[in-house]
Image (cartoon, rainbow, N blue to C red; front, side, top):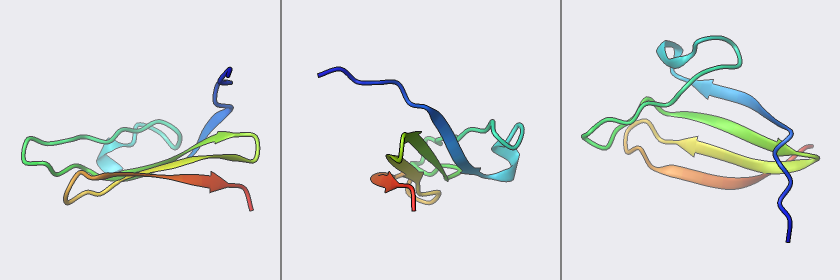
Length: 68
């Protein structure tokens, strides 16, 4: 099965200090397990994945995403 590349990254949400521009940012992880938190949607066609990072626990959640 071939995997096609992602078409785009959209809806990038992160702490203001981690954003370099409207479309470029990062999520920082700390030794105590916390993070700056954030969310990014990775799109391919009408679907993709939403990746979220909890700021308090650093827990990463991945869920399917569909264009409405």
